[in-house]
Image (cartoon, rainbow, N blue to C red; front, side, top):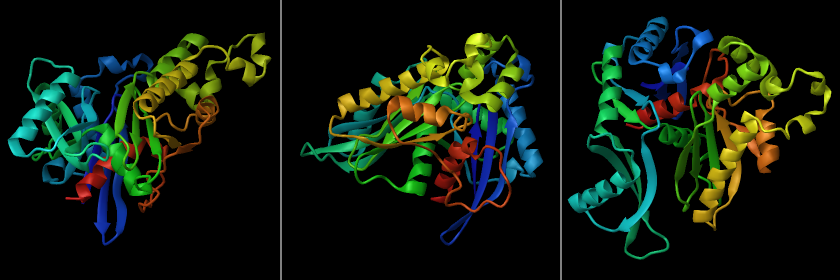
Length: 350
């Protein structure tokens, strides 16, 4: 058994998986709001107490006792985590660790506490003899302590494995699709406060970046365009999708193709995706993108998948996190569980 926990600014998600032979089954699944009042919701105002209470209520509802659980993998809250594939000289032991610690300090926003890191040696670099490719994951001791405190206050006696959202997404994609032999696949997880981009491919650089436009920012523009509160904006977003920010004036009768030429939060979102992918291509000129895969709570927004596909001239598909996992109960918006499932899959590998 393995539990994957994704503590989100908007919703917290839990998935409990069981493995029998090659078969994986969902034993328990659920989500709970991380806020008290949706009308006045602000992800920047989220508190530790809210997250703890939200997850405790969720575990109570699912009849899971945290204190008795041994196999927990939780996704670290926030984006102050660096994940970078680097090329370094082939070396061993403490020498490699010291080299990676120096590299980590160049990329992570320091908060006055020491760097905490992990790494995975991918293999020999295919371009330079005597060098290796290493996937470096780093954060700060302060962030780890904060996350550890949340998990402990939820009630877990053993705090388990802490994972980064991009790694959980990659785990899920490898489980579902495998690593592409040619080119790269692009994973785009649209959360509430930010969007996580992951690029993955065999013999290609592993790349991840956070984009600071996501579901919350969609709602804020819907609020402004329609003069409504956050709760009403969330409802309208689900009902109308990207058309929820169309003008309410007589001009709204214009064709959609004309409407989307206006600068909106959705055009800004796609432009940020484009910039990130262009950056990857600039640093990896031999790579190419096979397909874009969407996940996260806002992934199934009406019209968004086609809007991204048209504007980026790419094939876009929604990730089905339960593609190879047996799920008996009906789940509303399965795409929001991608990180939780990716985390739980890592727990099954132990």
